[in-house]
Image (cartoon, rainbow, N blue to C red; front, side, top):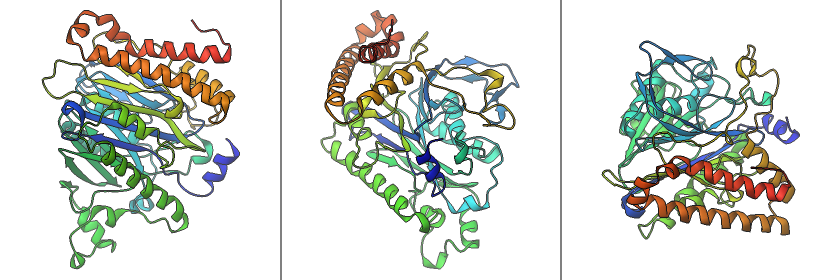
Length: 449
């Protein structure tokens, strides 16, 4: 554990992560564009995994991070970005165009909750992706899991963050709409978004404009004096949002990040042609804190470009699997039978000896570095983020990224190429990783084939 992370653990809960969606009429070609930065402890490795859909035996169970739940009869194919020590995902997409990202939020209900091992918010993201054909269906699955299984358990494998617990909010999108689910303990509110734009940071944002509310939500808020019906309409966020008097600076930072994200979405989409490059630019933004630096930093980024219903063209998902989107490559993935992303974004498997699985948990640390993460960090540490070498590296990265985007867009925008070059479609992500690893090996002198 680094000294800086230890000092943070003594001060306040980390506030990080930002999730975005842009829908028609603000988006290019009536597509839906989803984006997420996953901000986690700076020593935590994230994987990018593709899991093919399949049928499952009747009455079978699926092992999540801490607990088992009933398995679905059929799961859909998914691409996910996930902390390597857990089962669940920070964000991901499925073959139906459903995309989900989750955020840590801190509500007044936290003081009333035990931290019993149940589902993590990230587990719920993955379960919903595996089981949903639409955003609405994913929303319903999330609510059912919240109500029937619940959320709880360690949210970090960092020893000095064992105290940390939080509620969750979810941004869910598909080809036509988005849903927001925000939670405060066993209570929740939802909001449907059918056009325009929406974003989440680490604060509750649903006010009086909710579409659904968990049973007993208003009554609980009134009982504890968080809402007085005589003073006005029920406001979910104001009633349940925790106030951090002792960490006021962090609270202001979160609100500022949320506001900055909203402003950038509006600015980039004012011509009604918001595109993948615009979302990537927002995720790279450092002044707002959306691209987070420090002991908690952006460890992986994800953008999805979802075509409208009936389009003959391919949707495309772009994931980094490495920290700091400014110095990372967004690599393309297209759902297709037999997709193969390779093993460079997969962590080692420690089996039953994994400290996240051994009881008591997290008593030792293991190196979970993926091959891509290891090479990226080697260059990142040697070149830094400022100075001549950093500028050279950034220029090389930008040149490579521009080429990958150009080649991918030429491919996914041509129905004939999509049909004739199925091998390319299967390995788009893997080929981009290969190009990225070759670039890193030239800088580090390591051998990569």
